[in-house]
Image (cartoon, rainbow, N blue to C red; front, side):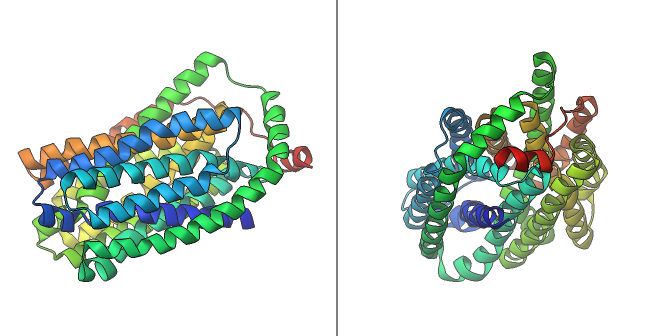
Length: 394
């Protein structure tokens, strides 16, 4: 549990640094005179680097675990934050965004391996503990922007390099733990290979359906993370400060939903959680663009709670399909999430420039329809029990 909490704290710090970039978009838009398409391009560069590198790193670490990469990834994120804070041109903003993407790409696959190794067989719970750290870190971004960065200017982002240094120290300690337990992890992966597995065709179909669900989820989240502040400012005439707080409310609700999704999946099954989460959010997204401010805030909480509960279940479901490819599967789905968020942000920025921010949310309201794909997911192979896991590790 100490290891899970430690890696969750690191996930919180990593994602807190990452979300500072979209949190200061209002400053960047005014300071560099950017349009929405240029803001979308910043997100695309950041998300695309994370999307492309994560599967490659996952495949590499499946062949030979490299826990020492974890502090290296955090060092990339720290560099990205400093570059964005000190950038004097749009091209340097893009370089800083790319550095942040590389840092996140390095962090997620290898940290997911530590999470599974420390889970004691309670994979959904462990994945939720890990992911709630990231969700909580994301929710802190708007608060930090509202209370610390906005009053002091973009250059104050550089102070967060101190937090990154603390994360590097903690990740270095977790690296030592991972090296000591790598043999137990190898025995567990060998044991998992002996379980009954779905036919290869069924695995491919299931992974394709899961990828569709991830696309729908993170395309919608791109509309929130990148443009929700502007939506509230333009439609309801909120000041930047209040809009940042409203984004924090959504992200905090998402953190709560993330924590709930994994343990519920351990009890009732991952497929059920995925189905309810992605498809169940549809009525609320359809209503969101047509209600007043108070109802918008309430609906954002409901959407955050429901939609965020799926990802932990999706990652664990996918690793149960391919238990001997933890790094590759984690890298694929975290990378796909990054990629869809980047493409979504860039595309939605064009829509906002062409039409309006409100039109963005009217279009995205229909994305949860893709949740119908969850109805066709097969039952995953029976997961190893916590008792069996402990026996293998011992």
